[in-house]
Image 1 (tube, rainbow, N blue to C red):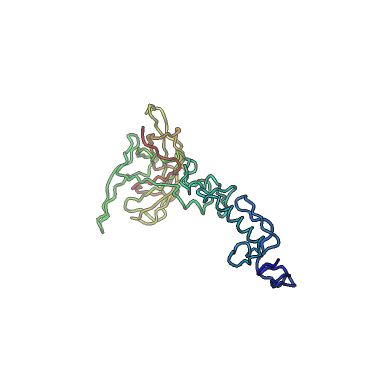
Image 2: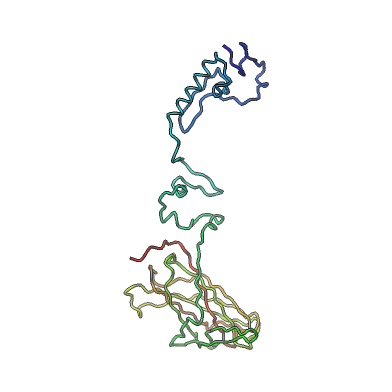
Length: 304
């Protein structure tokens, strides 16, 4: 029996005498489709098996094989919900089968929506991890003990007004406070602060001022006079020029007491009396406001 286009020699087909002459890809053994093995005959060219129009009438083995493949395929429904096992590598990150369920509309757990926490930096850009709240000096209250002094200054050239809290450079830490409830998606961990400040007229470049900030959390039924602020975090900054805005950033601030959802957080800011090196700012330091940055990981649920 001959096979049209076969790589076998003999019969009426055009045979080859050297295997190097045959440049067409050959398929041997089994074809594995999702774990289903389909056997191909070793005596037929694969093109004979799959192209019925090109087969000679005597290619019975090839024709039977092709018809067997078609009959098997007709019994199989399309794959509506493809699955896989193992992991797919994306750069240095392995995405598991469960995690890829997100792409198929599957139920996603809180942990999976944890803003891709603890993944390499190149993937953290997919979702925000930090948010910021700004509190202006106009929303702060001078403390009853050792208070800073509230004021407003108009910068005359363009009539821009800034509320401020003025802190003396004396031996006492002057203080202000503000209170707020943190957004519910706060991770209840440490926070950072950026302090926006200036000075009364007459300051010299490179004069030093040291700012401090601390915080405490109050939960439902907490005694309002029962908890002290956490340890103050201090940062020393320098005047760049008289009349300039300066921005100083703190290290991590630990909120005293264990914060819970919906707690009231009290913050205190002060000018540290030990600042102040040999080139201490002699004029009042003006606090314009503070930005609090916090990490976002918790989901937000409707109040019940």
